[in-house]
Image (cartoon, rainbow, N blue to C red):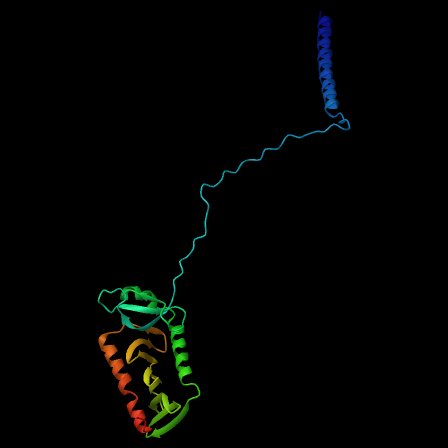
Length: 240
């Protein structure tokens, strides 16, 4: 009985081994079939590889343009541009040629222009004064502790000044076409520009600040200074 059971067990092992061997042989045959060389002249087209689609953005970023703000110089005194009966509008020169290019309505609108590039505007204004005095003939006279000077072109004064000889504090006055163009207090750099005797702009501290709008009292004092500052100097040099 025991011997019979051993025979049955051995037969099962052999059967399992045969089945396993058959599976191995079948796999090898499939591998050889798949590895068969492709005959010449037969083209093979591979299936296109699908790439993942990137969804288009719903919005396209555009560079933001900054609005350019013009800077300019006020020309002349306030006038009435909008016909409202008030002289509170300002003519503006944008390209530095001294000719108004636009008119800004009301003093509120002037705030964006008033102190724009103050130092540059001051330097430009002073260069215009240098052109007036170019090649002028200068005379100097000292009376006590005060030094007087006058510079003329074709006999006409283009600049006059008086100052304390040791300290340098005093006044400088420029003339154009026989009228006062500018007056500067040398001790603090306060500089006034005029048009036909009317104050147009005031610079403080040698151009650190620029003011086109001043109080009535300041305007009155500046315009009076333009009328009287040069008189004592002209007397020294007998200029009428």
